[in-house]
Length: 459
Image 1 (tube, helix red, strand yellow):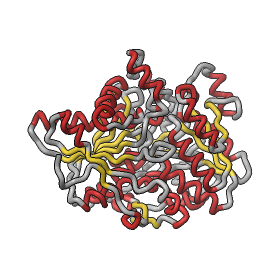
Image 2 (image 1 turned 90 degrees about the vertical axis):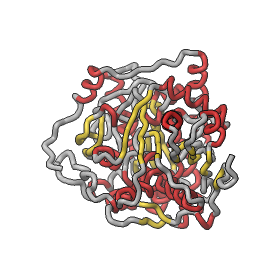
Image 3 (image 1 turned 120 degrees about the vertical axis):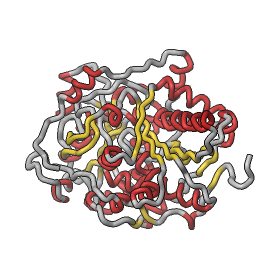
Image 4 (image 1 turned 60 degrees about the vertical axis):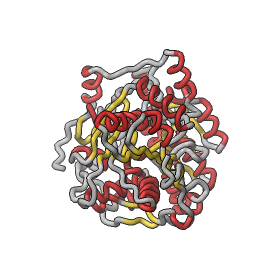
């Protein structure tokens, strides 16, 4: 083991980022704008105010300011759980017998167990500043719902969470944590909303999807006084808040003169991947590095690897603006794999644009394979990864083994988005051999694609 680089690299409070990095400012070609489905014209701020907080709308539409200051009220919250450690995976390297150096940014050192708290704190803070009294949201695996329930409790805001039904059944203890913080958690689709009742009428046995849950949360937000909807992934302002992850990585790596060759992140909506790659991608866009960026998604919900790059709605009820993204279709219902946070039909418009322009690679894995990788990781590094994170673990191991096969030394960085201690049912099923893998057929994908309306949009 080298004595030059410690196993865990921690930053001091003084070294923590004081701003978020908006790498859209460095994108030579921006992603296409949101489109109003009624006018087929680009959305303006006033179109988004009925659904989102005003400051979040401002951040969503900001394509010019590279640095967005983090307010003191959010920075003080961050100090309770940030900075998070950058860890050198010496034991994993030794077990793999690879010349590669493997690092991971561990975001599981807070009660929510994930990176989601970075944006939850910001969104709850801005809602409080605006004088709102309640928020609604959706959650898949429950990391976002748990994080937002923590933030809303801290800032004193009521919260209703529509949790994808299959996830609420698979992860009851995460639901209990949300309720302990005071959130109202409703399995989705539900009979509480018009759209939920319609979805249940069409498919009474559905396990739900993030698209369904988003529709229900938006319906409640726009029909409730002094309430707004908040989202834990996909949108530009969420990736902006998550840039603290990548900024801390870069500060720590620069401190020890570590230069990554490969950066890996699991990708569902794009918040984790966008966060960890942000400052490094900014340098790549300016010709300052040649890092490989790898997005890893489940084979059961392959938005990037098998989706279409086109305008689509962000939810099942078609209430959102039209978003240019890689999508499987707003009516696509993925199988009930355990990586609930990666079960979204679309992908961040930023990540979609960067992938389309070949700045990012993408691959998909079946869940049994990623849980095999998780077992290697826990035996060597002592952390039980969340099902979402296991995808990044698998890709990192594959890249390290490729380095071994070619006798090439590379520096690999990946995001360990959180812990899997609320996901023990998944590990139990894998241990017992009961875990199944579903890869959608072309016919199943085509059924989802059929829900994409071919609007005549010039962007």
